[in-house]
Image (cartoon, rainbow, N blue to C red):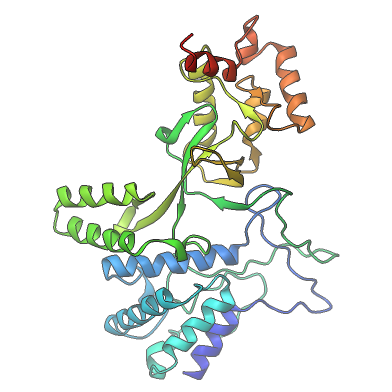
Length: 362
């Protein structure tokens, strides 16, 4: 038992840098202010536990990494799932997750939690670590990036940003127009998990049970109830499901305003935005909420600043009344000079003036 727990702790704690090896740079998957892969790993473990709760299935391939029986593996997951839900706040770092697992499983027999043959008890620098072999897909990773000569700069959000979210891949139909997108964020993530209402969790479990017996009418009714609460269950492969929180993102109060769909070039602007984000995860820096409970923010798609693309392609106006960043004015000016997009028209109507006229019945 002691060997297994030491193995677990090594896998989940950050390595202390030596004099010959400077600290690793935090991984930055999207834009200049990314999230570490370790954080992604904690979210993955939470999702793994949630999948077990609704499907009673341990991860595929788990037996390749531990020597215990399926019954013992299910016992682990029952205990870990209960411990995770009771944790206040839930684990947010690999160290916190490791501590929870150790405390939960410390009473098990050594044979039950011993790594299988071939799973090393020490790991070389730069490796991707399995979380005690608990999953071949969902794992806590600590990926070391190329060494730097200076310590890394702490992750800081830009001034004015309240929080950031990393979304699931965007569906085409979730693009409302040229400056509005509905996005979904994994509810197992560190920021979201503690806020999921108990009735939503219960409905997700009941929906999975209904689908298992092919009662799709009840499953659809439960999905509608979940959606009414601002969540959605997304079905994946191999009976994997993801409970996700919905955010409606508005770009118009954060630098740009695209033509409404009914306006000239409105459909074209929506199509450009949809093609840019379809099937891809997004990074959203949220500055606040508007009067319609939409999150106002900057959007990055695989490192590309979406507002910049929309302005440079002539798909949006610089909304100077709400955002005075000089680069926005420059990007709009470039599109105007090239007479591309909506600027191909000699005198395009401003979206905010069009909406005002509609409100006044003009």
